[in-house]
Amino acid sequence: MANPDPAVTTSCLYAVSRTTDPDTPAGSAPAVDPAEAARRAVATLTLTEPGLLLDPDPAVNEWGATAVGFHTWFHAPDPGVLHTSVTADGLTVEITASPGLLTVDTGDGRRQACRRTVPYRNPDGVNAPSPYCGHAWEHTGEYTVTATRTWNVSWTAAGRSGTDTVTRPAGTRAVTVIELVSVLTEPDP
Image (cartoon, rainbow, N blue to C red; front, side):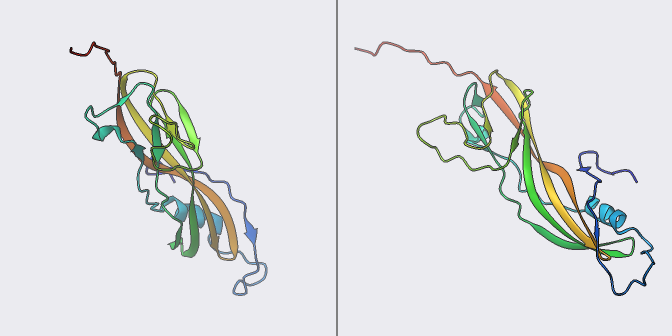
């Protein structure tokens, strides 16, 4: 079955363990493979993402832009853990999805994996790099910053269990990068 959303990536490798189900007669297998039912259930998950924030936000200053060499911090609020059950192919699949790695493509050929993000806190002085996840563009231009989140998913169904990872979009932001030039002048007498 083809994935209906090309922006969504689902891995299909499962570490499956089987436990004895008292309702299943010895030597018989469920009519539907629990791993396949789980794969289908995981593919339909709606994983809510709060979105990607840029700090300081270049859209709210007087230029509507950031400057060459100025550090922008990437921040994605924690979307939280999702616990749900989904019925797929007649089996109930219990699912827990935990947010994992945030990957940010900065639009200028660079990509970074962010295990943690924090909001901008105006640390020691102006233009400080993010301690976890940020970027400073080297050239003027229009860039699209795209983030994806890898979710760690565990499931149980019909006495079996497994794990999976799912990658979903986490936000996109347009960024204008300009060059700021300062001019020194003599003060008026």
